[in-house]
Image (cartoon, rainbow, N blue to C red; front, top):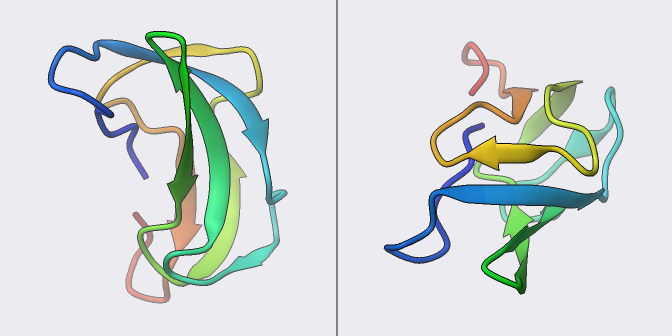
Length: 79
């Protein structure tokens, strides 16, 4: 799962809070993580259903748009 831009101008986002932990099952569209960009907090939903296998960006990390922040095993190879 990559950090997607919240706006056209967004280059970076800061991970504020994960709502799931590694090993948790997630549903597509379920709240997964809160990201702050340009002083706006956005709730990011899981793009797929599966298991949150690995969190690659911890709370407080500033991440460039397009970087992978988590790996979700969707039984089709992950995302």
